[in-house]
Amino acid sequence: MFDFTLLACAAFLAGLVDAVVGGGGLIQIPAIFAVFPKEVPATLLGTNKLASMCGTVVAAAKYTRRVNVAWSTAAPAAVTAFMFACVGAFAVTRVPGDFVRSLLPLILLAVAVYTFKKKDFGSIHAPLHSGMKERWLAMGIGAAIGFYDGFFGPGTGSFLLFLFVRFFGFDFLGASAAAKVVNVACNVSALLWFGYSGHLIWKLAALMAVCQIGGSLIGTRLALKHGSGFVRKLFLVVVSVLIVKTAYDTVRHLGF
Image 1 (cartoon, one colour):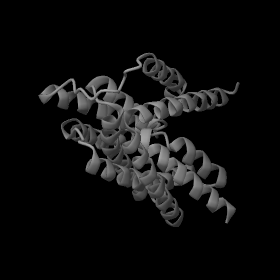
Image 2 (cartoon, one colour):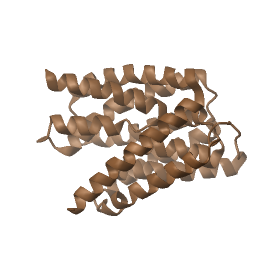
Image 3 (cartoon, helix red, strand yellow):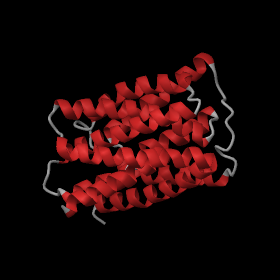
Image 4 (cartoon, one colour):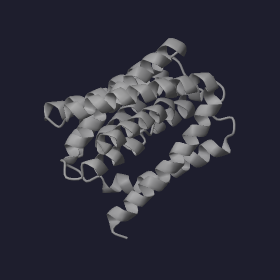
């Protein structure tokens, strides 16, 4: 009973954080692996993905009702993210992820420094592109993030948030809304793979999904209430934690 209570709490907190800035996997994945250390990793990842997808869908629906989502950017990015998440999931079975693992802390550090130095970064919603240029750029970002999500995964939501602000001129709230749409596409794509291969614990996924949804509702409400400034601050906190976590994982994996 304690184990399931722990996972329920982890799923709730993950849903709350993920709804605002992404990065909920930092909380939920370590928790589920700690509770089921002998379970097949793919099964735990599939279970996690189903719960995460439910929370992300609810957050995306909530955002679309309250925020003007830039569909001309989000939709093309979601399509290519869906396609390339499958490619990434296939690639991870053929190519070791060690190189990506070693680069991740440095990439996240660059993102954090850039965001911290630019005090007005993401404070104003001023779209930079339109027409075919916007669509092609969105498709490129969707493809890259989709592949990354399928191949490795940590920080996908946070990367999307940063890229929508940096390359499209969105404020943090608008970027968070668009990121949720693309995240749903990534999650559905990966979930189809896990479901097809039978890597799911349905009862556990259902429990965590309910808790994820509860956290997502509160997280979305906080973001909508407090605006881009709140999202920016939480983004920097989550990215900082991601840097520490991924750096630790890299060092441990290399045997230091």
